[in-house]
Image 1 (cartoon, rainbow, N blue to C red):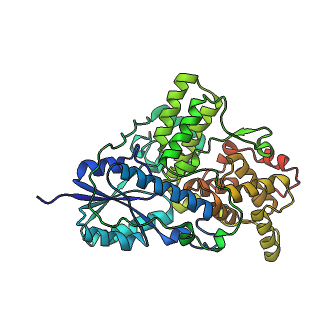
Image 2: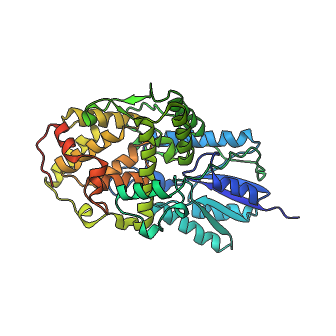
Length: 427
């Protein structure tokens, strides 16, 4: 009897725990073929002359894929690693290994969804189904108290209705037994120099966080075991007036090394042990913001950004603006807070959320530079880059989200100005 083989295409879902796509593929097949594809488009130059991914992001990604491969190897299999365009590679694999279906997690941003659509078109010519799963949110869309088209545009209303009327489902169990398609050559993991442009490799790098499911779970458990009393803290005095808590979980959440639901339920368990506290609440609030931004992209797509955000006012000449932007990127503006945080971002790939708000405030309202340039630079440098989070946060600071009132629930713009100790040209 002919065996059924399912190809599991991994993207930003690099984990075994709480992975519905993987669990379903194992249940519905005789053998699975796990695949990760390094798409060159994810490392190319952008229209803003930044790179889709810098060296620190790429290293964190490589860590995460290596960890996923080790997890499969412990179960007697492996992860097929290839480089190229998914819409070209996946149809070849389907025919070569007689694949019956292809599973993958659906994304919400325009470029990522286009890749899925192109793959789906190519597979359909072979009469092969591309099955979509959703595994990046705390709440499944079918569990929300409203259809996607009616999701409130304001975060406060979204939070209130969701927390009151929606449920967070239990996590899917981590597979303990997997049957793999037999392959002789599983492919080598590329070196960072092979995927990242030489120009993007320039600069001092101090990678503090290690990618992968194992490291993500270790980091989360260490946070919770301390009961929030000795949490790792980031000093964000310029942005908050005192040392501010940053869990740094977003780095693992962005690549799906951690499931939002796993984080949620482990925090809830910790609350049972230690009681509720502001640090636990901040982690849960962060998960809600992630959901909100993804659902905004799902509801509005590119239309989330209003005309105001897409047509910023210019204050300086083109040459002067270019120089100011370079100073902002390099951390040589002369403003102590801005320069310190940019140096931290450039060398470690991570800064706390409050520092990001301050940096974006300075670029948009002090330098009067197009927020899109800043968002593109954060895409290159931030190890926790996620399209919906990054672009929506920047648009909101620029006053260009669907609901401009959301900026008040996100942060206090006036406070940011005072902390910068500057007289600025407010819009």
